[in-house]
Image (cartoon, rainbow, N blue to C red; front, side, top):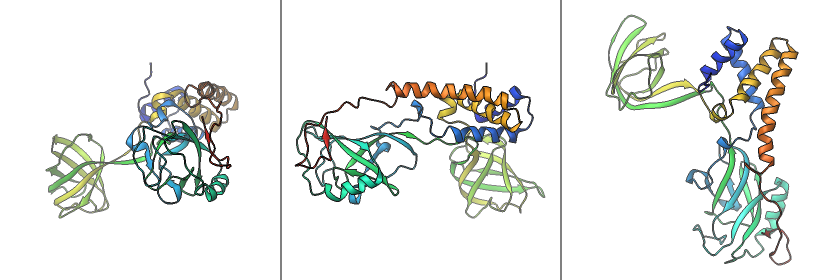
Length: 328
């Protein structure tokens, strides 16, 4: 049984399954499959709206920056009073849930929403509205600067084999250098070597020493918890001395989609592979499997288990005669 826990294992599986020996070709097919999966709605991609990192702060003009990892909003809500200048949660209400509308609608509504009274101490859930305007979300009823908004949404996910960097150690010292190219040297005084393995590609910020001489720097051995040896290939000879921010350069080897929905990767990549190999009949077989797997996810969404919910709401409160807001 194959356990596809990493991108490299996925490539090996597809090469073995198809009989291909072209790694780049398989990676290209995986990338094509990922493009078709960008909007998949999986439980693993949902944010935790009660986690501090998913609670946004409203700025000027009742607007809040769109999170960098936003893919698709599910529900935004406010756990507190909507009073201007207030940032604390309220036990007396109202509590607001925001429905998504179009950008032209939200701009139109926001022009007048500030002239209507917002409810105070109303023990009810009021339905407001929000929309994307530029690179921000805008809200009605009008919310003051500093108001906290809980964001429940599907997060974007990293594509496999995307270049990524991880700082392993903030300090280090390049020791004596041997060889005439390639060169070998030791780095000591590291805060840790955890996360490094032989063959890893590393870089560092120059101090009195330097690894930034146009070469490729590869971990040759892990000497201990604070020391490694490396090999420099190409460029000019490294410089001995202090360095900072020793960084591992690698690629994304896993993501939430591969871990929770591997069939999407397998069926999608195989469909793309057989299209490339001019075998439409075989491609159609795996495209059907891919569509069926996707339909299973959508079916759960339609049942309200993942992103649905009741929309049977009745309005029992409206500010003055303006019917912009409703209460459930």
